[in-house]
Image (cartoon, rainbow, N blue to C red; front, top):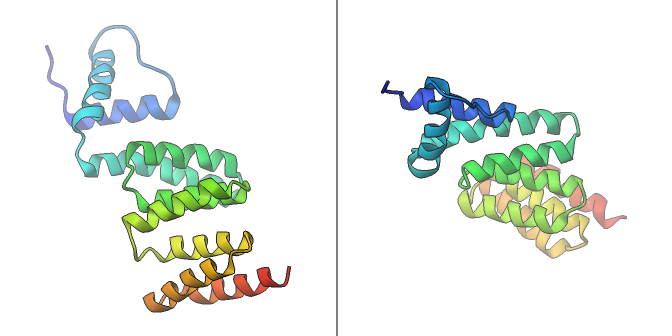
Length: 168
């Protein structure tokens, strides 16, 4: 039996995930695809999980840039399924859900991002915006204060966003 490297296994796993086409039959490709799915689930190191998740994160960002929020949700969901510790993916997933009007899911993912990375300014800004859109200005201002304490560039953006939401 031919030995297959972990990188080869990871490559074929990503190929199957991205194309959605399973490799079937016999031979080294089929064996690599089958073995990689087992290895990926059981023993993939954190950095390899992040590399795999990052593919979906980047695809999600492309959809975000084009305001295709439902498609972005699909990609960010895949990213956090692979690597649940990916704070930026949770934050962008929350943003996508918020743009779709799913505030419950948005808030949940923003909170997860902040739990994973308490100084992630983007997640505080977006959570503050979500709270402001929901009319929960005290909570929004809590995240504004956190941004100020962090010395974040997002402070002015959230401050202005809250001000506009209060006039609606």
